[in-house]
Image 1 (cartoon, rainbow, N blue to C red):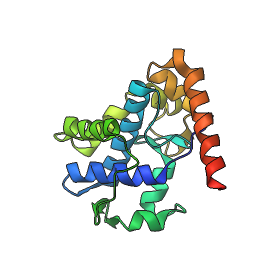
Image 2: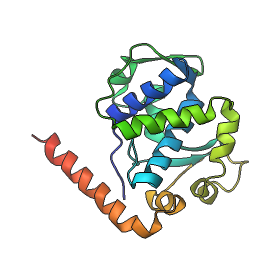
Image 3: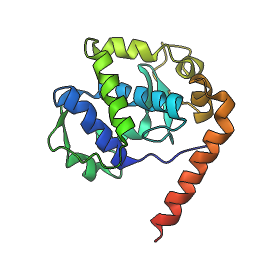
Image 4: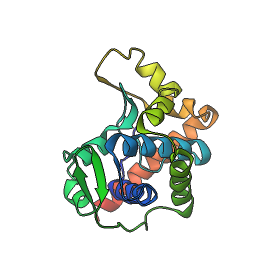
Length: 186
């Protein structure tokens, strides 16, 4: 089961994170913080912030591969991304503040809490935190490899303790995708 990656929410969420981070942060830090935010949102509300079409386990922890593509300029929506952000070396710099209208108050608060709780951690400490996630351990058992492996959203749901709600969460994701596809045609 997949859930559509929401580019607008990804841009807005990145803007929230970068405002708290002083308008600049490393790519790896952004990728990890956004993954943690999606994971915590799923755990608390049964719904991710960005969506979960392509979650992957990589050497430095789990991430949204579409988010990585967006940051690296390989995503179809790169033009929308680059209106707000600029890559400088390994960092992403906030150039123009995006709107936050697609994010709920709860999502903005959660993003801010995630940054606040990790302000004193360096990037590699945050990477180490994501190495403790059950879904990453399951799909990336060998740190010597340098590849990526898909993380099924069902495994993420189980890892967040929402296994009893899995069918309902998956149905909500399916309904949301159908709703988005229907209104995309109008």
